Image (cartoon, rainbow, N blue to C red; front, side, top):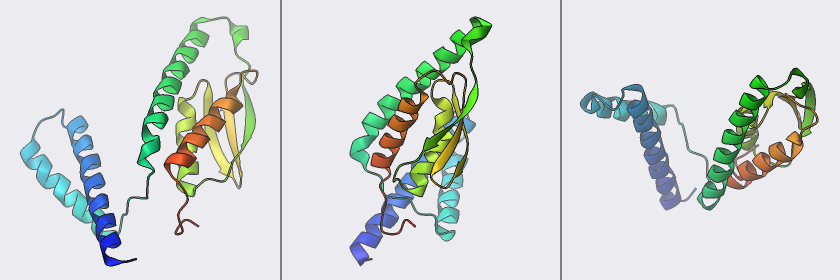
Length: 165
């Protein structure tokens, strides 16, 4: 990797790690103790860098579309589960289904399995090769469309790189 590219990658990694650790400090400390927090954040960034943690390339231009989809899906998922909780017992037809994964990076697949639980009535259990096992509250609903859309957004946001196995 050429020196300017490596330097830009390192600066991006430091900036993203610092922002993530600052956000964690903000939440966990109830926005207090920033004198100690800044020291903690700097030490956490140094530890991450010494462990050779790197931020993967992200296609930032796709972030707004992903966030809109994610927030809409999370809201609809919460409303759907609430409706089913107070609804009739025959409104639930749970079952295990399989989602065939597309050509996406390992990181996108990992996030897909983690975020699928925020979609309406779905929860990913595991990934076996190119198939993700999903439990759904209602096998009659169009869960496939929602999971496929989420996978599409993540694949665009987290593209495969030359380093990705």
